[in-house]
Length: 465
Image (cartoon, rainbow, N blue to C red; front, side, top):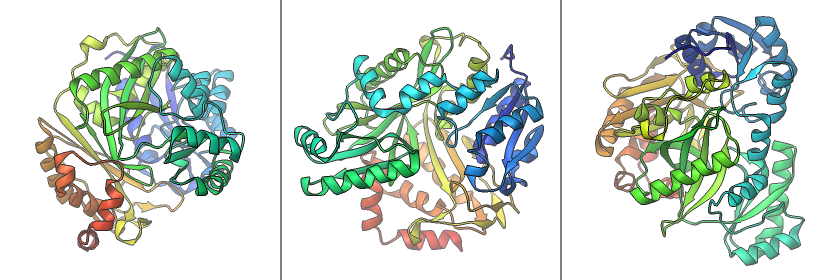
């Protein structure tokens, strides 16, 4: 593979399974790794695996993983010349990226300018429209108030969705079905945006009912080369949070796939993008697709693409940050088979998806042909209450979708986890559901399924016993 020419030690500014993933990529590249950890993560798998570890503060993330001065101090303490932010936390924080740049630290990700441009959703909409990507009807600028919101909503047609301009991760948005509810919904989203993002700007889009969420993985270098690595379907969601991802999507025809992937590359090129990133689209029932947003970071679901393409996205993020050219073009990329990822969260789906924290008494992930598990869990690990509930990702790869679903069910049945509640039982029920098996599900599937299924609670409780 060859080693990057400039990076010698990476500080991993994250936790959980993505920290473990980055540490492994560094080791395979022959690069030293250090991990920044909170006091709550002192016994974590990432701390065990990294060459060095440095505590950056107490458990709550504002005092640790979101503390830029503490992270910069950690860089100096371990002598790192690069940082990898993973996903979440500071991964799309242009200020952190700029601080690193100003101090001569390589930020493994896109430039601060690109992060800023794509992080502001109204700016991203304008840039993608200029690049020729289709967009849902809506406001080009943040809404000035309730009067403009009413005017824009009437022009787009109800239902509409209000979104925080600085938002992301499925947060800071609300669907509005009636003009009577618009003003109150605008105030609610503005307050949420102000709390979560310190930015109360909100814009409006036509809400595409019964849509599918399909995203395209792109990878670019600092020399102007950009390729796509196919699409992932992320339509199994709960409250705009992804639960299952798969590739290829069952909703795209070959012609649609070609157009969508070409649009993603065109948009990334227009943004001057380098590193791994994702261009996200909504697909309506007529088969038309619309740009939604661009994520300027590695995605949770990146293994789906890795197992189909054979390309290590995390390693290539590091290599690109070191100045390496990709060394391959679109014609060199081959995508094979079908891949599915299930996010195993420490949650109780039968109790309103309440978080479940505490000691992992037993933890034996599945294995065998075509099964990959990315996790930071181990027997005796105590899951802290401060962070995201993601415990493991089970990824399967097979020749066909039918075989992949069968393989996933086998893997989930093997997963032995005790001490906390998990979503393993939910995913087994999902794999057996006729609508999911037919590939005709939409974004509202989980809500409908949870409302209609009398079997889910029994499945979840059985999985926990």
